[in-house]
Image (cartoon, rainbow, N blue to C red; front, top):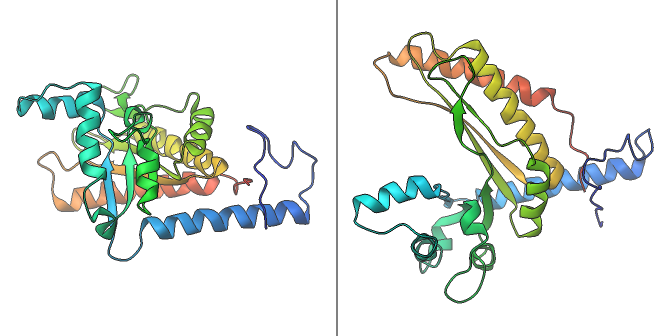
Length: 243
């Protein structure tokens, strides 16, 4: 069955009201494709390589080693990773950063092409990082939803088949607040729905940071509270109408 992709922003409702048998088939086919991608990402014995540090983060690591951080050196480092002989035996998917996604290796091939040619699934980090949550002191909310639909479409066309979005939660002094938990949960769910709409498998990453002098029990309670909100927000998204 050939599955047609809807125009950006369109849903079956906007294209003709009631859902037809054909639209139901398209949804089933699209969800089957997403399922197949997820299975390939996590095939037995293979993991995920996260090569998605931002230029600032990787620059700090390079600095400690006396390495100059530039587009060229960052590309060379990531080429070293993705061209490691036998990598695909142990790695099933690779997360790239936007800069790397658009770069070429020394052979002239794009990074997504190199990853895919080794039967690994190419992914892309799409969030814009954790930023201060308004009026909430040290708490963070992950941003990057503006323009995400168009960016996801471009990433799909460029060879990406999954995406990653990370939210962080601090423990201590009343954190995480209800506002922070819900703001990040809502953003994660919106991101995930947009990914499914674009045909990409979303990695939803709510990370409760371990830093602090709190107990294991407190960490478990906060983690459970965060996950309940994330799953509730995900459940509120409509089923994807993608093709």
